[in-house]
Length: 178
Image (tube, rainbow, N blue to C red; front, side):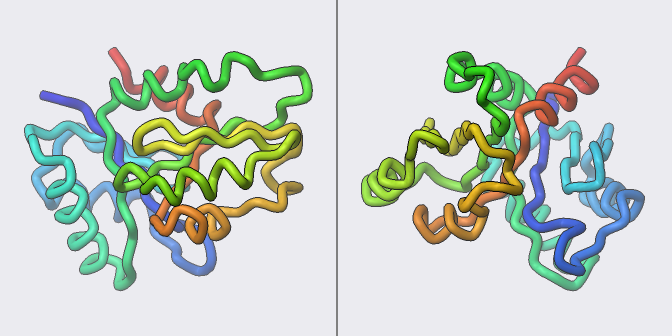
């Protein structure tokens, strides 16, 4: 059975608190198996026979809204896809100055206009690359020191996103793969 990871947007920030036990139970109530949460920032690993990932995302979002009373955007990837992303060549050229390596998950591939907007945001400090449905961000600043934010990227892309550090993704893959 394929193993998936759901990345949830804006969980346990801004008063949108979700207990990991309740999150696990909500996924299990959908018939998903082997459910594990990974750190309290909205990462859920599970097994499913689902073939249509977009339909699976909508099904999870509806269940989470019913369970927690607010909208939770959900971005699903296979664990194998996450492993490839965590070791993507976009992060190989990092220098000693690199302090931030983050991947933004998008629901759909961005439009040509969104690609241009992201290219225009790239600076000597913040390097941005779009690959398919993921935004790769490498910076010589810490994420907290950056002038960029999830909201800035969403405005530029005109798409919802959620971000995870590459180190977190590598730990998730190491723990849940094989």
